Length: 146
Image (tube, rainbow, N blue to C red; front, side, top):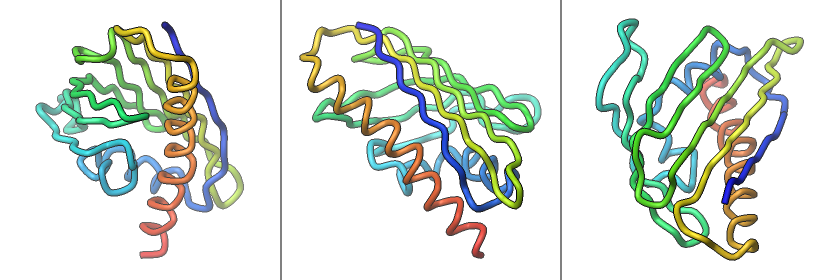
């Protein structure tokens, strides 16, 4: 079952701070409730996180995932290499300047290996977009404040 989620929101901090938080992949468990562990397995040639292992729990289901990350100056993209519960995952954050702050667009597409009731899938989907908006915003604003 393919599931897609998308949200756009504003953050009161410059894009450089938003990208700094996203690039600090190992801090995911600090601001993203579903992420229980995050470990960089390898880096890209430019020193950005490349291959990452995460442990995620959403809607009562835990999964260990290996992801590959690609970066630009204003975006973070990840794709699933392997997982227990998912057959596909593609996520993207795009960060653009908006006055003194940033406009963030988050998209997440997943394909589940197992069939789950729609209510559980919707709960996990809501958790993903809420975490993207609330968790990322709080962490970015905490770092911007120093």
